[in-house]
Length: 93
Length: 179
Image 1 (tube, rainbow over the protein chains, first blue to last red):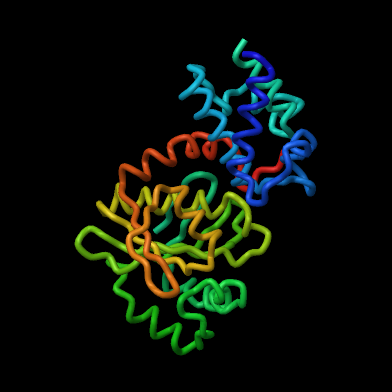
Image 2 (cartoon, each protein chain N blue to C red):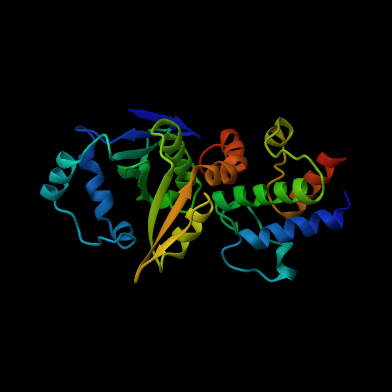
C-alpha cells in the first residue's frame, strides 16, 4: 500500500479515538506508549480496531494485529504513527 | 463461582468476600458516579447482601491474574430476559485502562450465553460523558432520557458485532498492556 494512504488511515483513526483533539501538525509526534502516551490502553486497542476496520472495509486488505510477527517483534509496532504505518506497509506487501 | 476470561477473573460476591467491597463503593471517586451518592453503612451493606436474591442479582469482584482486586461489576434485577448492568473500578491505576472493558465483555457473555438474557440496560448520569462513551463501545443505544440520567439498552447481536475484534486483541495482549 502507498505510504501516504496508510498514514492518512492511521491519522484519521487516531482522531476518532482521541479523547482530546490534537492539531494535525502535531499528530506525527505523539506517542502511544509510556508516560507521554496520548492513549489509554483501551484507546490503543480502539485505534488498532479502527485501523483494521478501515483496511478491511474500504481497502480490501485482510489484516490481523495479533499475529505472532507483531507480538514478538523486538521493536514494537505500536509505539507511534510511524511504527504503525511501517508495520502495516510491511504486512500488506 | 468464577468467570475467567480476557486475562482476568470475575469472582461472585459471597459470604466471605462481600464486606470488603463497601469501602470501595464508599470512596469519593466511585460514589460521585453513582445515582445513589450517599455513603453506605456497614449495617446497610450487610442487610443489602443478605436480602439480595442471588439468582436474580450477580455481583462480581474484578480480580486480575496477579490476584489484585480492582473493582466490581454486576448484572442485577433480572426479569423477563432483561437485566441491569454496572461497573466501578476503585483502583486508580486501572481507571483508564482496558480492564473495565475486558470485565464487561466477560460479564455480558455470561449474561447472554449463560443466563440467556435478551437485553441489558445501563443507567448513566448525563454528565458522565466517559461512561456514555464507554457503554456505546459495546453497542448500547439510548433507551430513555430522564432529568439527570440516561438509560441505555444493549442487544446481543449489537454486542457480538461490536466486540469481536476487541476480543481477538484482548486474548493476545496482557491486561493494561505496556509496550
